[in-house]
Structure formats: structure tokens, C-alpha cells
Amino acid sequence: MEKYTYKGLVTQDDFNLRFGFCQSRIAIGYTLEEASFLMGKHPYFYGEYEEMRDGTKLSESEKTLLCSVFKTQLSSPINFERDEFGYDYKRIIKGEREDKQGIYHYTIHHPWLIRIEKGNNVIKKNFPITYREFPFRLGFQPEREALALFDEAVNWLLRISFFQHPQSPLQIYERIRLTHHNPIFRPCYLKKILYRLIAEKSLQMKTINGKIHYTTSI
Image 1 (cartoon, helix red, strand yellow):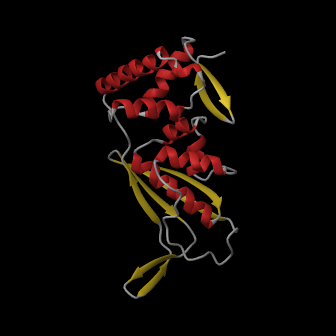
Image 2 (image 1 turned 90 degrees about the vertical axis):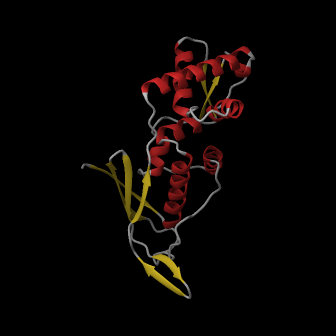
Image 3 (image 1 turned 135 degrees about the vertical axis):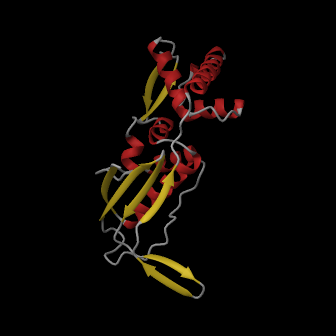
């Protein structure tokens, strides 16, 4: 079974923060592209961050935005022993993702010791970090229903002049999600409807402070 591999050069604290966001993304059930969309970024932005691509980093405002997207707080979930080379020393991290019967299995190889407390004893050991992700999949008919529901919801927002002022993807998504309380409402379907409306010239896209917004205003 073919493995997808990636690697990056990051500090211990930076890796721990990225891993914390990764776990929050999986917990809420968003794909990498959905996370990018809700941040108002290009489709690969968040994936490049999570996979530690060269030079990828988040500003403080983007970290705060991600916490809103994932309904979480900043966290460093791995109890690492402090890196003996120092706080700012970057180390090579290697990741693997393998699809086994529709479930993603991740393995991350790193150079640090992880502290494990067992009673009064503390074990310090280097071992790979492993976790799983259940990718979101929806059948053809349920997907059509989801798109129809989003189409109705977004057109209602158009009728009440919600888009008279530029709205971020997260603002639009939360407005619809909190109004309808339907688990079938996924960010990927909202994106499809918004882009269709842009093609029809009912909406336009604006970049404000480095983030994509949607509006009817010129």
C-alpha cells in the first residue's frame, strides 16, 4: 500500500503547535482544504502548514483565526522533554500517511524524547507519534441534497443583503450552520455554491488583509 510522505524543518515548540492544530482539525472533521477555505486562504495553505512545508508559518492573527475555525484553544499536546539543542533549534521531522481501508494512518518520526508519567516514575523515550483520521465521505445523493440546502441558504442571505458588506468564509459558514443545525452542512459544499455564484456574477471575491471575502458590493 503506497505511503504519502512529507517532512519539514521545525523547532520543538513549533511542531507541537502544528500537531495541536492537526488534532483539532481531525476532531472537528475538516479536511485540509476546508480548513484553508474557512481561513480565507488558497486551497493548499493550511495543508502546507500542517505538513511543515518550507517557510510555512502562521501569524498571531492566523493562529487566533484557526482557533475559531476549529473551536479550540492553542495547545501543545505532546509532553516533550526539552530539546537539548535549545528552544530555537530546528530539527527534521518526517511524516507518513497511509490509507488502510478508507482510514488514514499517520506516523510521525521526530528526534525528541517524550515524557511518560507512570505513578511516581517518569519514562523518557523517543517513539513515533501515531494517529488516525477518518476521511469525510458522502454519497452522491446526500451530496446533491447538501448542495441544494446550501444553495437555498446562501440565496436567502443574498435576499436579506447579508453580502452587502464583505463577509469572510467563516462568517458565512457559521451564519448558515448556526441557523440550520444540520450535520450535512460542510464547508466544501459552501465553497462550491459561492464559486458558482461568482461565476454567475451574483457575488464577487475580495481580498482584505490577506484573507478572501465575498460580497455583492463593487
